[in-house]
Structures are given as C-alpha cells and as structure tokens.
Image 1 (cartoon, rainbow, N blue to C red):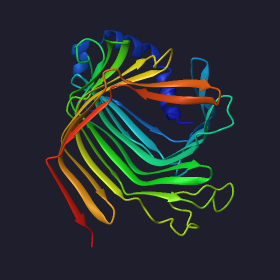
Image 2: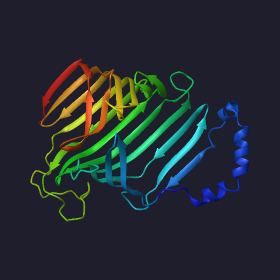
Image 3: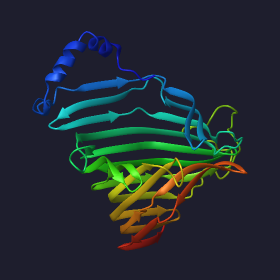
Length: 334
C-alpha cells in the first residue's frame, strides 16, 4: 500500500500540538506569504492495492467491478507528489510511476453474464494550481494554469476471450480559468465544472483486435511488451487518431436518473478552432473545427431489470451536436 516515509510519520507525531497551534494563528495574509522552500514533498512506493469487489447500487440494482487491482509495472518504482502554497494558490505537482489497473469482470448482481474485463497500462502526471472560490467567488474552487496528463497507455477490453486493444494512448488536458461549484440546477443540487478556456490534446497510435482466444499461456496475461502474436492479423490496425480541441462551456452532474436514483450528466460544451485527424492508408484532416455538444435535460444512467435480467440503461432526450469545418483535407499515404 502506498504510504509516506516512516521518517515523516515520526516527525509529525511530536509536533502535532505545535502544528495545530500554528495553523490556528495563520490568517489569509500569513498564508499568502508561504512559498518556495515551504511545502511538502511525498514519495510513495509499494505493491499497489486490490479489492475483491467495488459495487455501485441504485434502486435495488447493483453494478459490480470484480477483482479490481492497481499495481506498479515495475516493482519498487516511486511516485512523487509535492504541495506548496504560492500567493493565494495551492500548487500540486505529481509525477506518477507506471501503473497497471485491472478489472477481472464487470457484472450486474444476480446475473451470470458479464460486460467483460479490462486492463490498462499507463502513467499519470499532474500540475495543478488551486484556489478557493468557484464561479460565484464564494464556494467551490478554481483551477488555473494547470495540466493533467496520461502517457504511454495501452488498454485491453476482453469479451468472450477476444481483445479490443488501444495502443499508444496519450493526452494532455490544460485547464485555465476553470471552476468547480455546487449549484442549484433544474433537477436539484448539481456539481458543475466550468471549463473556462481549456484545451485537450490527445492521440491514439493504434486500435486493433486480438482474435486469438485467451492468452498464449493460460493464466499469464499479455502485456504491451509481450503481445499475443498468434493471430495473423494481430498487427493490423483500424488507424490512428490525433486531436487538439479548445473547449469551453460546462459539464454538470446531478443525482437522479430517468426515474428514481441514478446519475444525470448535462453537457454544455463548446469547441472552437480545433483540429481532428484520422490516419489509415490515407489521412483525413479537419482543421478549424468548431461546434457544440448540449443537452438541457441531460444524459441519464440507471440500473434496471426486466424479464430478461438486469442491465444498465443510458438515455438522452435532447442531446444535440453541431459542427462546422473551416477546412478539410484528404490525402493518400505513400
């Protein structure tokens, strides 16, 4: 399990009383003067974590993730996180070690069927600048000049012994003038993410299928470094994707699905001056791409049951996607 060094724990115990007194004495003016050498640096390492089951329940139905685990790709690797207060912002820097996330089965309780299994190999990083006060300036918090990143990612989705493989996935999300607030929406209280002027840059190197049933060695799962090459078409791909999206608007999440419990997601997202490119034997490139994705009623997620069994239901009434292209280009690769 990830844990801070024993030295840090030992230091914190005898200083607990004095730290508490110091925190009581600090006001906003004192906090704004804390910077540079002040701060906390954490290095974490360990064998990861696992859970036999992670359950989500609503209206008497349960969706279960079975056999969930997260482990480092290299034993003994270390992740580093630093926290510092600069001006009126909390700065968080995170450099994660390469991880493996596994879900052995995704099931509805009471059903013998499965949605499949999932494994992901990835590395996470973050550089966040947070300050108190949401869009209203009172509640919530703001995120500015910040970045979230995922790199060197490969994902496997397995169904009936066959794999859909997404290779070379990476993205960087840049958050500027973004806010998180709890607001009173049409369906009650909502958590609202105002995107401000954000940017999403992502790429996928390959999307392919592995139609050789199971793993080459039973009980030993394949990895990006040891792929399954039994299928003659194992190296074939649906193509590559690249995108550079400039985003605005907001996303709201509320409780309550189409009926009863559940989730309701309301996108009000704008896209401007963006780029999208798909490459296979040729290149399809859309430049100056702009548009919007809007749903006032929202997309709902409910867990339901009928005579055939339990299922997850996604519904939407007024989802609208509009797009315009400033220019499009199709070229054949050599």
